[in-house]
Length: 362
Image (cartoon, rainbow, N blue to C red; front, side, top):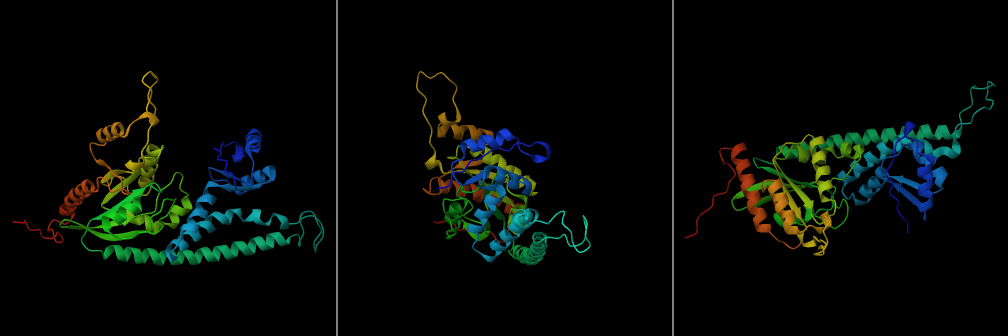
């Protein structure tokens, strides 16, 4: 087993770490790996590895590794591979420290700084850099073609409202997608189970619309991944309605809401009509306070009913509490989505082209 020691990073001159921080990690270090909850430069990784004598991973490297394991389609694999190369390129030098440039020797011309001082390490470094740059250029061309295809697909989807499921990773978006669309999108209780955008046509009563399942967001999402997943995230930018799915059973769900809201704003999709769906109410737990305990309530002492009242008042009832797994309040959710999509449909397509006719039963 490899223990993971998460360490909040402190910046000092040129992002160098204080000795006491490294010593603190040494005291808690038991196994063969340390993972930092932030992105490290090549110099930082090299210096910390030399000090701790163990493998060092930063947050970006870990997330990229998870994405690489989850990628199933050619589209997702291309996006992840490009992000990996972008991350790797400025860090190539640390892979060739055993073949670094020779210094101070005499080359063909003799003397310090003369010709012939290039060591095999720099030669290999330059070769690898050229290979990676060529590969990145090819991947960018593929992604440009993918973007073009995705854009054409979006234009050909007809006169229907587009609804996108957004939220933190592992909150139940794909499970909800399956229930609403009666499809079989891959859903599992793990981080980033979904990397590919899935679009399904959904019909509630007489109203058809397009429902999109998107890749989950996460705190401090690496910039390279955001850039590489442009075609996927364009689904969020072009949606008419965002359904923000939240795992209310998670102790930090409020922070996750803030992370998703900020990510949506950074993508240029802020200000869109949005509703919040609090999922996993079946998994919500709390600790009841003793009657003689006069200390103020903390987050873990709040009941689900109290939480529901607070958020419904805060969001002017623009939210609903459900369990996608146990199918709790699903009919109520469908009614809310129907009303919101119908309102948007009438505004965007006033001639009502695609509303199916319904007939009253006698």
